[in-house]
Structure formats: C-alpha cells, structure tokens
Image 1 (cartoon, rainbow, N blue to C red):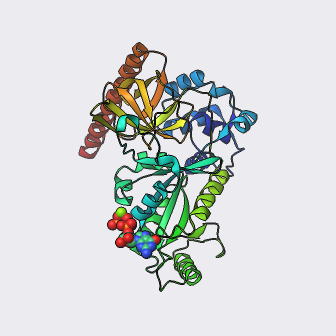
Image 2 (image 1 turned 135 degrees about the vertical axis):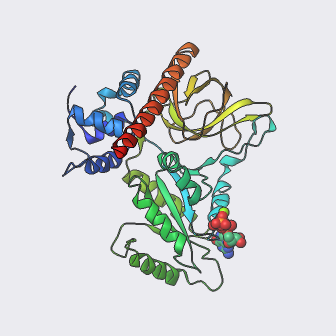
Image 3 (image 1 turned 90 degrees about the vertical axis):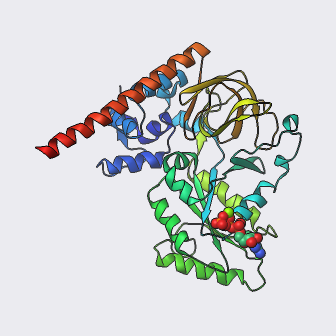
Length: 378
Ligand code: GTP
Ligand code: MG
C-alpha cells in the first residue's frame, strides 16, 4: 500500500474531500488540505471512522477499480447533480417551495408507468443541460433522528427564511445542526417576497444582519453563504436559486464515475400493488441498470424495472438520480447501502457477511458495556 492524497482517499470511499479533511482534523492532523498525503495506516483509520470496514472497502475498490483513482482520474470523473434538502422555521414556506420546484419543469409530467403515480421522496429539476435533485426531507426534526442517513444523502441545504418573519429559533437550529455536518453547504432562500408589504432588498438586508448576529456570514456581508430572494407563488427568483445551487455543486466538486457499477442509499421501501417489493434509492456512484442484482442492507433483488420520480420508466439511473427499483425480494431500511453484485448467489453471500458483521458489532457493544460495568464495580 502507498500513501494517497486526501482527494484520492475521498473518491475511493465515495466521500467528499472536505469530509475527509474534517475527519483528519478531528483525528489530530494539522495542515490538512485535499492534496495532503495520507499514510496507509491513517487511511485505514479514516475508513474505519466512516464505518467502512477495510476489507469491504478493498472488495469494493477492486470491483470498481477505485484504488487506482489518481488526480488525473479524478478529473475524468463526471460532474454529478447536487442533492438538495430544504429546512427552516415552521410555516416559512418549505413545503410550498418544494411543491413549486417539483412542478417547475416538464420532467414530472409525461408518460406514467402503468398509470401509477410515484411518490419518491426525491425529485430532480432540469436546468439547462444539468439538473438539481431535491430531497424531500420531512423537516429538521426528522433530520436529527436519522441524521446519519440524511446527511449522507444531501450536499446542499436550502435554509428557507420568510421575508416577512426573518430569522427565528428554528432557523438558528438549522445552522447549529449544519455546524455538525461540514460536508453540507448552506444556501439561504428568502421566501414570500411577493407579499405586498415586503421590500425585497430591505428583507435581504435585514435577514443578512440577523444572520450576522449568529456568526453566519452571507454574500455581501463578509461571507460566502449565498442568499437568494424567491417567491413560491410567482416563481420569481427560481432561476437564480437553481443557478446558485449548480454553482455550489461546482465549488463542492461533486463528481461520480458513470461507468462503474452502481452504489446508492435507500430512501424508502414498500410493497406496492402491481409492483411488489420496491426500494426508492438515490444513486451515489456509477450507473444502475435493469437486470442488475442489487444488495440493499441485508436484502436483495434483481432490478425488474427502474422508475423515475415522475413515474417514467428509466433505461438507467446515474449518480444523484432518485429512482425506484422494482424487484426487491425484501424491504431494506432508509439509509441502507446499495451495491450491485454479479449474481444472486453473490448477493446472498454478501448479505450473510453483512449479518455476521452486524452480529460481531453487537457482541462488541455488549462486551464493551460489560467491561465498563466491571470497571465501575471495582
Ligand atoms: P411547516 O411544514 O409547518 O413547518 O411549514 P412550511 O415551512 O412547509 O410552510 P408552508 O409551505 O406550509 O407555508 C406556510 C404558509 O406560507 C402557507 O400558507 C403558504 O401558502 C404560505 N407561503 C409559502 N410560500 C409562500 C410564498 O412564496 N409567497 C406567499 N405569499 N405565501 C407563501
Ligand atoms: Mg411543510
């Protein structure tokens, strides 16, 4: 094994460079940057910190050829759409904004698969020749309870602040939460600017000053957090918001390999009439195709059909695309990791391995508890 750069390590683990940077800092390394060289033993510790078993990491690496990822191959990876969540104070307009965005482009319409309307907790909006994926989180309370999964599904958080109400307690809570997730970039959307008594410029100025009091520095106020005025009613500012999100995606260097076998995370799963077992998945790497054998957590299936959030049949699904997999034999949990394997027998072997790992983890936990109990009794 040789030393790798932070960037290479991040790509090998499907993480972002800044996540690895902050992990290394937490582990006590100083002067860490994306080109910082990481020794193999440290790389293993980082992988472990991210919950990736070194062995599994190696297996996936050899399957995907990711151990050979270098600075050059990083450049050859294709940019992927950003995955965006919306959060903010109660009644500030999160749902209305998401609904307006959901219907803002023609993608949602079109031929529905067998007349079934899909409800995938994510949808994508096409912008010129790229797109933005919105992850329909039920709010930041839910985000807290499933923090790990959601934070791994999201790149950018749109913090919605109503122009007529300004920064409120839950707005501040969202920013506090974001401090725990350095991999999530905030974008402020000042909503409801269509209200008759709202002066957009004044509202943006007032909100920027309020945020400043909480040490959140927006653009034009000594910082880099973009602040975009919008109206979910007139759709004013939508183009600005979408362009800002794409710009952030570029800054975050969101990329994925479109030629590799797919990986993803489970958003939801269910038994659906006429479809059987389905898993709604956000692809995070590679391309998912019909007939692929997928392992999701400790369940598996063979892709019988791929359905978009708009209800259309898809020929394939790439990184950051939300997709419904039809053909699951069991129901995986939200946040479960999805990987494509060679055959159904391999799927069963991988699952057996995962179950064993879970059992070992559980035993370790119990042993730890017992150990600390004994110590405290001494
Ligand atoms: P919770 O889910 O309860 O936290 O609220 P929310 O943040 O999802 O707010 P919601 O979208 O339900 O909007 C609250 C109210 O504000 C509703 O009555 C909306 O119609 C109204 N509203 C939302 N966005 C706009 C907007 O851009 N302009 C105007 N005029 N009203 C809006
Ligand atoms: Mg709502």
